[in-house]
Image (tube, helix red, strand yellow):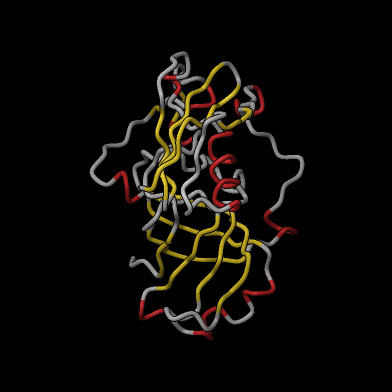
Length: 225
């Protein structure tokens, strides 16, 4: 299989990427087709769908071995579950599946037709292997059960800015809203949630430093990356 496209996202590193799609709707990314697939007729009709499925590769995990059991963050990083009962990126075949919001199709972009996405849980450069429309009548299952996920709620962090926080010119209101949504998801590894260490989250074109006190994340500084 060969990638048909790749993602352009302000999330350049693993840390801070939403653990599931749709959790940070302010996060906007672009899906850019590879040259041989830059055909307007290949996306004809796609503009009528609000969401699409993406099949992609965990390219930042290349070379990492898989394990039959993993420690889901939802369980605090202590209990082990079978890899096929989780969405862990460390899998026998490093394939991801995401349902993402399609903001619009840009047919006249310089790179050919480009898809503008909202809330995608993919890092910059992620290879895309296929795109399919999301069909609510077939794909949505309102009474589905979520296993151990239902039993372990993951509350959002409150987010505030330090009083003396200065903002670089590149930090637009949209950028700040995206940053706050990403931090609210609590991207910290489970093993670091009982410490007062300072964390750094890179979201192009800037980097933010924050610390968590209780259930509140405090943005301490923002600087160009």
